[in-house]
Image (tube, rainbow, N blue to C red; front, top):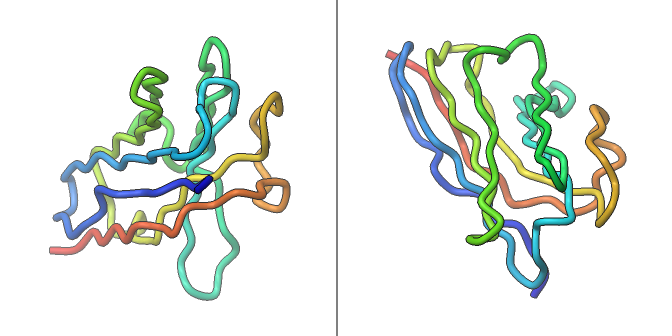
Length: 125
């Protein structure tokens, strides 16, 4: 079965850290750009990070630059998103997604056609 599965979310205090994982099954990730998005109720899904295929160039939104780090391990067929210095406004459901082999990163969620089920991140004291 071709799918993406996220894990690693949870409840963390402000200033804390988490690492989210995105596991691919049914296909190999190395030729796919992978984006991490987040969504809160009533708002549009926002791309926070993306890593290209090949050399793995990383892209970040201004809201998370310097605090989040995206990486990939092609041998394990995994992509990770490290979150640090978390703020209450980072609370959201986080999703990983791809738009097909050979396509690059794109900021719009509309062009991504494979999504995981999401993992909840809650930042609260």
